[in-house]
Image (cartoon, rainbow, N blue to C red; front, side, top):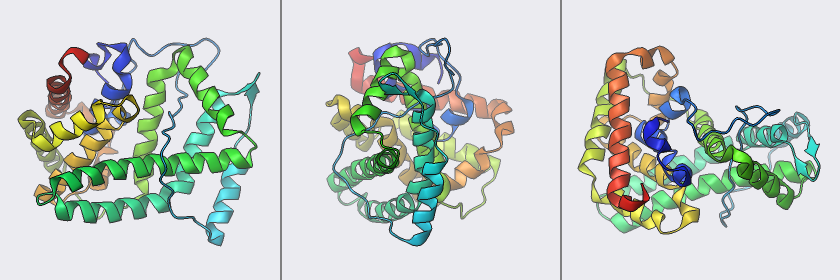
Length: 301
């Protein structure tokens, strides 16, 4: 996450994902280190995290095939429900969040492929509509994950209010930033449902990262506009790094014909993060993202 991101506690959800967006949604999860905002809570694992649920109206297509039904049964029967008083335990919450990925992957692939094709076709000609499609996509993914989580809760006889109250209780006890980390992790893991179609080299990866640095330093209007639109509402602020990541992904594809899942494949090799040039590029990306956000938020940093 970097010291840059620990300057103000109240901005964790907005700025906590800077590494996520700047490094094509991958390196935050692979290289993140605890900051002084992450609270060590006695008696509970500091590595267990939970995802803040967004409340939206999108409903993805229902999965009714026999294979899905079998998968659903496997998922729900693998979860152990533990309660602590009136609340469910962090272990149970974490299991629900992680297992929901298995149920969401097919719908996620469909949403991603369709939205990519449509928004990229209009990126240069219809900017307002393109921006809206970027927002719609990220909201749809959040809603898809939420829907699958609630399906699991319903089967386990966990009320939605009970789940949300348990999440909020943990946040109030100091797990705020860690909630974001599991959310970011989930958003990365679900991308495994998109198979890589191209092999890229480490040198090509570094070229792509340098391109992203250049884009962020130029602070194009489409990035500024998306930040302005989302900053006005606290509920949508958490979508800022995700939306920026989506736009960066489109720009990278336009120039290199490389998708995020292609980069994710090579980044599974953590040995690359010991490369000095790579470390410098990652630091430059984080700083470029921070400067972009600071230019839009000034007094909020």
